[in-house]
Length: 408
Image (cartoon, rainbow, N blue to C red):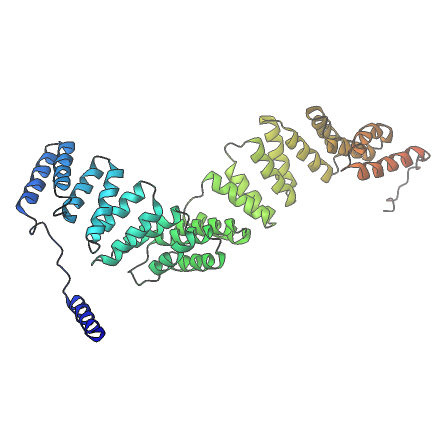
């Protein structure tokens, strides 16, 4: 008895496995009333009666839902629901379409596109991948949008293999947009080694594309590789004119990699027409750091004339100190104190200038203010001791005139 049941079960399984898959229905194989409903809906749509067209197909789908449900009729109904912006209803219909006929690629693609529009990115990615797998055409853009949906849904790590497959060349000539998605995915997933590899491959393929180099700059800046970021943005400038903001960014990058002369050049180019006080500070700081004092003085004096700020006066004072112009430095730091009397550093620098001008008595008051601040106390006290030594020293004896040069 048991042997007979086993034999019968094996025979049944063999019969099912050998059964040919049922052909998918087409518009030609639809029943007459279905074709008529499609025709009436199309005529209503062409007449501008989109809601009426939706109602015609909706009625047909509901009337046949239990007995002879048609995935194709539901697909057309879902497509019309999308046209009248009833996307939630359309999504439910597309779900029914693929449940009735999972081999129908257009159903999966409609489901993916609609879910994407509704912000259901994980479902969109799943449906688009399924649509790609079931389609005959195998359009690579479907895979790209599936990966984009994964990115938007927070699954960057899952998007990376899809995008790497796309740029491998197996799907035709890779597009720049595919590399953009891949680099973005690597950044989101914090997979920096794969990101660098992707950037290198992109530059090798799109080396004459300014957007590719700009993407390389963005990646390098995001992973704090400021030297490579500066190189990439410099190349962008060779391929197209840099915007004012990009020139400022490039100046910042060169300042970060301790190339102040290059930074000053880009800052100056960016601010040659108009500049805020903060931008003037960046230009002047770069000039100072690269020992271009004349350019720094020009920029600072113009900046103070246009918009005098504490920071600009402070930079001007520092420049005068560097050039040993202590009387002009004194005036600059006095202006700093007028603008922000609570800041200790200008008091320290004012006292230092007065000592250099041989006025130790005048230096004590501003140095006392600086000494009260914990950060500047040690330096201020050193200068106070120097002032006190100068006060205690006997006055210098005048040197009689001589015809020979003084000994250095």
